[in-house]
Amino acid sequence: MLVQDRFLKYVSFDTQSDENSASVPSTEKQKLLGAYLADELARIGLSDAHMDEYGYVYAFLPATEGYEDRNAIGFIAHMDTSPDVSGKDVKPAIVHYEGGDIPLGDGTVITREKDFPFLAKYVGQDLIVTDGTTLLGADDKAGVAEILTACEHLVAHPEIPHGRIAVGITPDEEIGSGADHFDIAKFGAKWAYTVDGGEIPEIEYENFNAASAHITVHGVNIHPGTAKNKMKNAVLMLCDFVARMPAAETPAHTENYEGFYHISTINGDESLAKLSMIIRDHDRETFESRKEFVQNLVAYMNSVYGEGTFELDLRDSYYNMKEMILPHMHIIHAAEDAMRKVGLDPVCVPIRGGTDGARLSFMGLPCPNLATGGMNFHGIHELIPVRSMEKMVEVLVELMRA
Image (cartoon, one colour):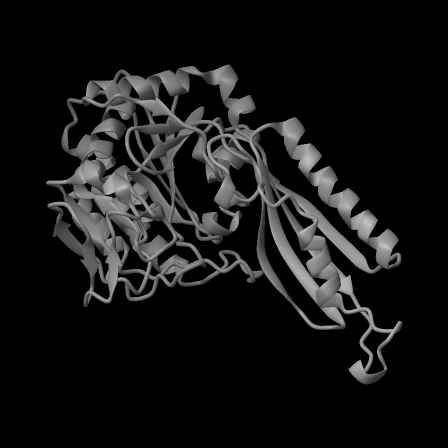
């Protein structure tokens, strides 16, 4: 099956994860695609293809004769899509891009070249786009499609030697839970690659250190007519907190290795107000300093407005995988060599985010990240070039080759 056909089938499944759910996986509908993938992996010819109770899909391609002593290599992607934008009733289209703007669906929404100048690199190529009402799902159903297509190629070409190949498809990566129940012992690989990145030919083995902060502000509500020297407006106190945050250290003002504070939600009234934010930095020492800044600011606000007015729930999410990859740089060199063999010039870039691979690396499975070819993830302008998916299948076949 062509990789684009496989991808188009996968995006027909609504697999949006839910960060407010306590179930595993966070949405039962992810298991519908999981069951389909387990069946497809078995039909391709992989062994022990199955979905476990948590919605994780595993399958294995035995080593070719004479290569049983090679270290097993793993390939991992995630099936869920972001909660940020609907992934239901995705209506993808393949457009042959000749330059300029791309009208989506009925033309109400337009992917404009001036807003996305990288489009110039893809003139003359077929692009898979949305209809402007949903995300596409290339993050990360493109990675799933590329891994399965590469495995299918190896099964169809037994003359290509390879060691044992382990395949893992996870739920809930988009809400930071994709590695929670991953069975590394069953997976049995010495190292692995997540196929969950952006444009080719990127390789990523550095990611943010990440934490989440939830702040609750307790106010005192009094009738406005008699509120003088009595009311403590929780919303206004929270606004005071936000005003004291570094204005230039937000995602809109940072790039590359620069960290940030990102306030994602604020809600409340005079009596109770809440704020959620994420804290990110590649450098571990600076990351710890950022967390300390938030802690100190909360303490200061309590000194101004009264002890207990501000409550902080600060939790680490994941860490920079670089420190776990550096002792195993042969993994990166192998990926670079595979890209060169198919005519690509690899480039290592830092991830301004995180992947399952970051957490898996700290769980004992060194796991850098490879590009899928997709762009504009988590939004209605998401797209992926067909040629990029085809090229990544070639890369994966070379990586799997003994």
